[in-house]
Figure (cartoon, rainbow, N blue to C red):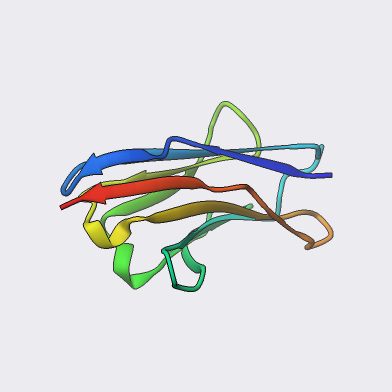
Amino acid sequence: QVRLVESGGGLVHSGGSLRLSCTASGTSFTLRAMAWFRQAPGKERDLVAGISSTDLTAYADSVKGRFTISRSTDAENTVFLQMNSLKPEDTAVYYCHARDDTWSEHWGLGTQVTVDP
């Protein structure tokens, strides 16, 4: 069973930066795709950024130019989300998502990101 563990969330002032990490365990295959979603209170869970097994990336319009998703060069099935120029509207629980070699979905438990005005 694939298990995703996120880290790196926290409290930051507007304009600041955070780096989230997600590490997958429980699989010997390279995950087909990994992504970050976020969910603010009272809102739906939305895609923030995704990266394929061939390093193709995609971003939500609201984070383009500010966030960068990347894969670790040291650890397989580990992705990062570098978040710069954070805004209060970026406040949410950020979830790691992955699809395995059978295209089954897996979710992490989430990490809270809070941006103070």
